[in-house]
Image (cartoon, rainbow, N blue to C red; front, side, top):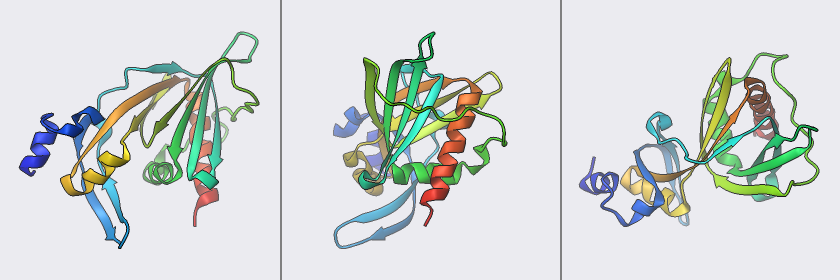
Length: 195
């Protein structure tokens, strides 16, 4: 690891306000006249857990192809079944497709999981957040999805420095049936957008 990368990991870097540092690998790098495309390889297993938590018992997935993003909507239900609170996580479509492709084994068996909910209006308690990386964990008693965000500045520097800085955004906790429904919906989305 270069001295520059070591300094960044130790926090001696102006980008330290961009969040924690992870060493990365770069593959399939293509340099064009106006841009660089690179596949970033990293392991989020040692990343800090997000401090913000949201408990969800329902979800919806809303692709926005004209913006190159997917909105993942999580909500908490009131006793009457209507949404009490809504979390709207904006993910780039490309990062979500990459994550689905590398986590194909997470697709649940047929018949397990809940269907996405039709959300027609936002409750008073609603918040939107951006993310471009995610980490999941599940067992028979529950599941969680941790969202992380790396800014365009951090992503641009990561190609040269082999270190990426990102912020923990939010952890969404849910029953395994909701997680299974999300994974099935994301898998169907990725099939529908495959080229």
